[in-house]
Image 1 (cartoon, helix red, strand yellow):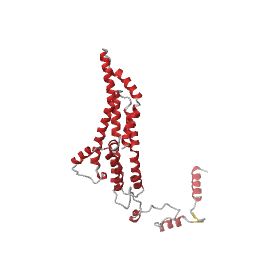
Image 2: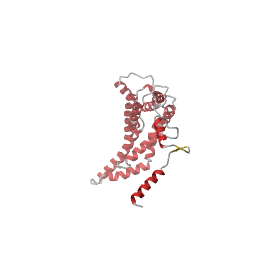
Image 3: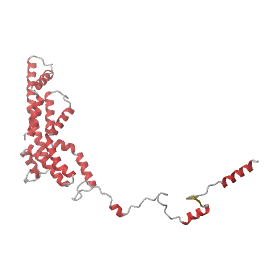
Image 4: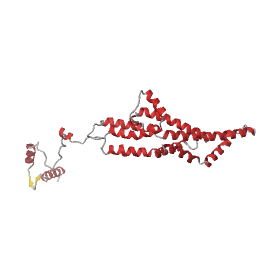
Length: 286
């Protein structure tokens, strides 16, 4: 058998053994199958036998989609972009709120003056003093924060009240706390500059008037307490300097002798206990 004859026989055998399309066990000629396919080109494939095209969203279907709302749907609320803008604004102003609307200002000023009066340079470190002031602020402001959480935050998150009422309820405890610590003279100063005659009650005081009055009152009290703290350490420095001067030790820095004596005096008097107690009770007692 020649090579050309063998190839022709192999091709003829392959054409003879070619499978024929079947449908449910019955043979269908290729021509008939082709004709059937051409006859109904636009018919949809049965379920489970092909891939269906995705459904088209109609306006009625779009109206049924859930809407995004951060507040009570029954009351008039701000739009979502405005709500996000207000939230970011509050977060950016959070450090100023903590510093200027709580007891943090007085505490951190008193602790800074105490470190300077002792003459210990960077001991305790600034991080320790600021951390102590923050936790003392949390302790002092705990009743105020609890009232805000109970009367404002919880009802707002549960959808009982709207945003405006939630802000009003949250501002009341803060205003009450600041008014208790604010001098009448300082408050009248900013009322005169803002051309405000009087208020019906303390809750009607605007924050742009109350906050600066509260801050300067806190600074005044902080410097008064700082002077009382500074005075005994100043006396120790004067005594040590006069003793060294009388002994002729002019080249010896007085701080080298007075610093251990001031530390010893502060520890024996239990200074941290007395200072923290007096400052905290000034807020709690009032």
